[in-house]
Image: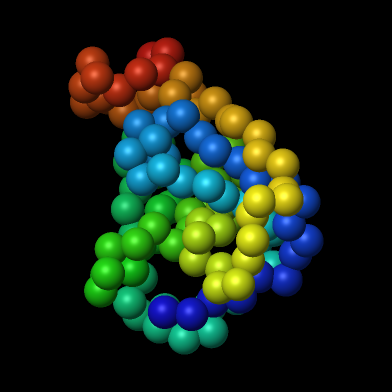
Length: 118
């Protein structure tokens, strides 16, 4: 699978939700129009949970997290910067974001899922 982004990378983010922590995600936020899948779109596997608003995409061949449509900003993608060939993240500031305390709205939410209930 190959994709390209056409957006300046001036900030990277981490997230403390259970999914991002486990995959050790370091992301750049880009508008929807700035992400173009060049090849292998059929190889993407989608994962959704909780509200179903965020859509997480993984390569079905290798299992790598590629990008996700953001829950808090559904017109943007969070892109895994480790999938950007030749990109050096060392000079870009990193901001921690809070995902663990986002509201859990799933009726069958298990107690291990942090976050306030509605």
